[in-house]
Image (tube, rainbow, N blue to C red; front, side, top):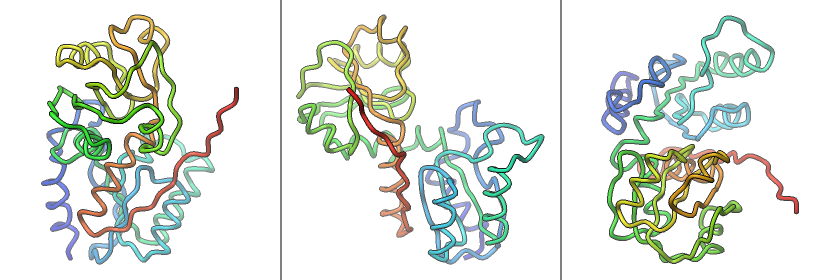
Length: 235
């Protein structure tokens, strides 16, 4: 398929005009390769391991959530040079759908709602609010990563869920207004935890966003490449 047709399809899934201002110049086809697309790989991040696996799978395009070129490139350090060599040598396209996929129907947050089995789901300005029938150990198993809680969390309950770095006081307040009695996201700051009207459940960025890319790959018949961070918990 011609790459223009593929891009049109991707823009229907995650319309570019749904992206937040922070993504200006950072979504869409950010590295161009071959013009004919036969196979597509999908991942959360374009890490060296993911790029190597994409090339090995015969993919012509890698669709990711996070751009590997976040900051303006004024110099090419060794790590970036090595990654770009892999991509360019393989004539691999890299396409990014970030906050536009966070906000899209069937995107990151809808995927989390499905994964967690939420019911009576209401959309928020970012994220969702719904009834969760899992207890905390069940929630951790479902996400595949450990959890950290702030405050007294009693599950099952109605819960606000935002994929990625979603511990925003306004979003927490919005979840509370929709009846949530707990809130799940990643990358919690101390000041936000202290001021929260709800008890908070902290997972990892990867745990909350990779499911959306995995479900997208399944829906589209692409190859999903899992590359979770190596983590250990010490007590």
